[in-house]
Length: 156
Image (cartoon, rainbow, N blue to C red; front, side, top):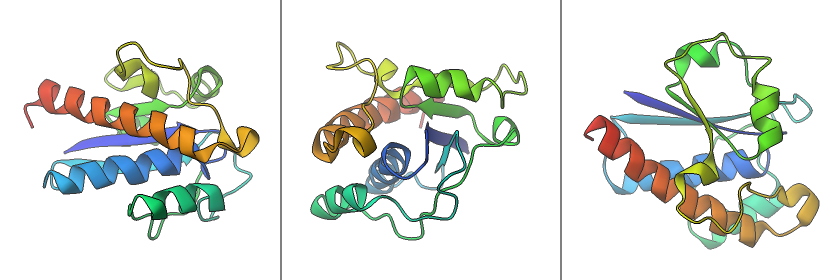
């Protein structure tokens, strides 16, 4: 089982969007028995909250489920539980360092690192930009490429 964790600041906009999109792709390809998906935030302000209304609207428009998703904060245990920890921006990467247990087997990267010639190096936070559609566009491209990378690397 390959375990993937998406991370942003508060776990209500970008990372739950990525979790939902990635899970949708995994289910569509009938490989849910091989890849587990979750998301978390580096901060704890929104623990137990459902995804932001903007994220829910975009996912509803795309017919992608976010059922049962609630915000949680990243913990040190995540370095034991996940093979991939995928952040949305450079600040998330820096913030993740305080949780890292130095498990060198875990791949820590930004989502846009998996996109050739990305429009952005980071996924902008729609909590501040208000542009959930653009965030979805970037997340969707990143998740598609990440899944392809994982399938090739792990022969799935």
